[in-house]
Length: 277
Image 1 (cartoon, one colour):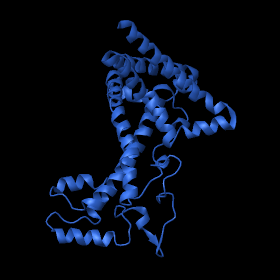
Image 2 (cartoon, helix red, strand yellow):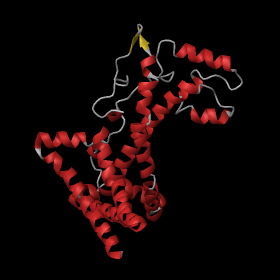
Image 3 (cartoon, one colour):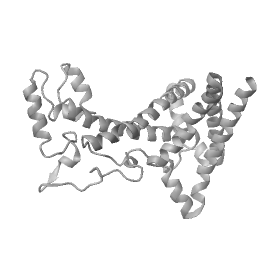
Image 4 (cartoon, one colour):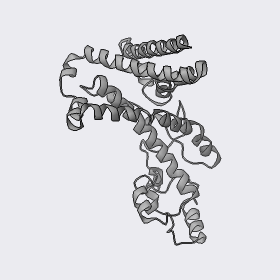
């Protein structure tokens, strides 16, 4: 069994470093390579990359050798990341020696505190991956059945911080993680706004909860019925807000009109195509 665990560990390290090498190589293969690289940075392409580097090794390890394989895969992911980080920093000596996020925060809170906290945040990767699965599997049927607005997921779920000058090694990988994470979470929140305002447009009895949730759910102060109201008030709001067949949350951009016509900006939802969710 120890041999099997070592095989999973080694295979994980090699496959992740190989995958990273291919990602670095693609932009150097001319226009076709750059096109593939850009596709892998957004929408379904990015979903495939994230799956390859994060949950796929865990799934394969677990499937092959149970918990021993799972732990071996995780160990391989950590070691693979550390190796890539070092190699990337060595390949960019000027940026490595220049101003760095990691060095600044190390001085602020201490090296061990900073690195320990960063690795703790990595534990959330499977959570965000499952959120993304939900955006693909759970929400789209709602756009067909009750006509909730669809979204171009690539406008939310994408990464671009690799273009920022000076991001190398440790700084780059964690900034890309946050880049992906914020897009996934923001899209999920947008979808939840539609769900809440469609089915449950009622303010919470807890004033503090209303205050805390207003940023993510603006309709709390933009149309939801007061907690001391009645069902007649709720029905009135639903009939008023959905009378034209628009089932988006009440502050949705497509509800904002110019001379009676929906605004034609990039935030206006369209029928999902080319990997949209």
